[in-house]
Image (cartoon, rainbow, N blue to C red):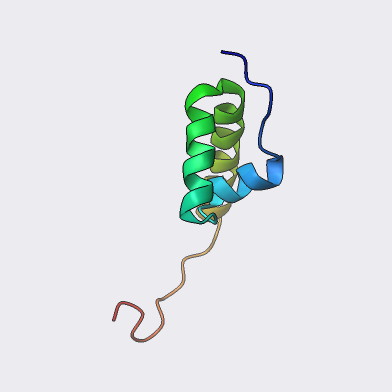
Length: 67
């Protein structure tokens, strides 16, 4: 199977950030199942996100945050 269309980078970045609604997540996940190129792009974005989070200073939770 040849993939002729790829989601734009903004949509892939939103997927990697967990910012898409259910329908969009399903559509992108379906594409990723068949597209190694886009899976690689997602992995790279997840690594960037992980690096940003690991560089952040720890902060205390707000009062009642777990309620």
